[in-house]
Length: 257
Image 1: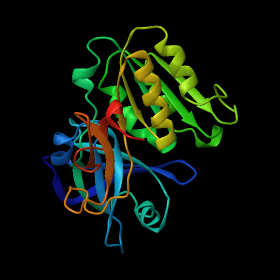
Image 2: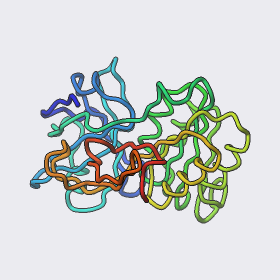
Image 3: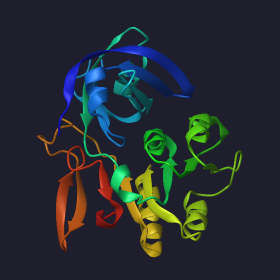
Image 4: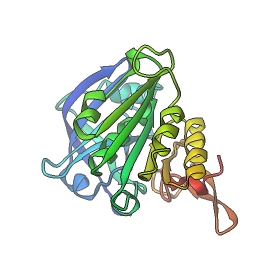
């Protein structure tokens, strides 16, 4: 796992929804190494432990990474107070990303995102050719990045819990409908654990390759502290693997939800 550590300049900041922010960070050395599905580890001003944030978009030509994150506590609130021109203390890129180059085998790819799990699916969609995106949100006010997905995907299906936009359904309803068409080579997903478990069950039912991105509390972010383990079954044996290093992306059939 190759990564860079340093202070990088924020060159753009935007509020996307309530408590959700987008940072574009100039980091040519990290952007050159980054793959979709990886994450960065940011040192929030005034805090000791870093905060993991998924990579939303990679622009190697411009030398930038786009990060979209939700303010969940004091640490992410401190990061959100940074502005364009400020320096971001960051380790990047970290973890194992999605197998976009190997898995789809020329067939259609479906990316499934739920809530703040939506941002990393945008970069994933950008690395595939024939893509359907299924995005789940609580309501109209929580929808983010819809226009960006529409720009790179053949089809974008939006689900909301309250039915204020798109389908009043959970993401597995349109996912089943799409899988029934039989032309899907791979499904990539990120979101709440319960949603990922349901996606994993559905793709297994249809015999479609699926990878999921897990979220766990992290300390070091590089595999040293062993504080972010997930239960994985490989070769008939149960293992505890580090989400920050062996993940955050895993084969869905291996994860013990």
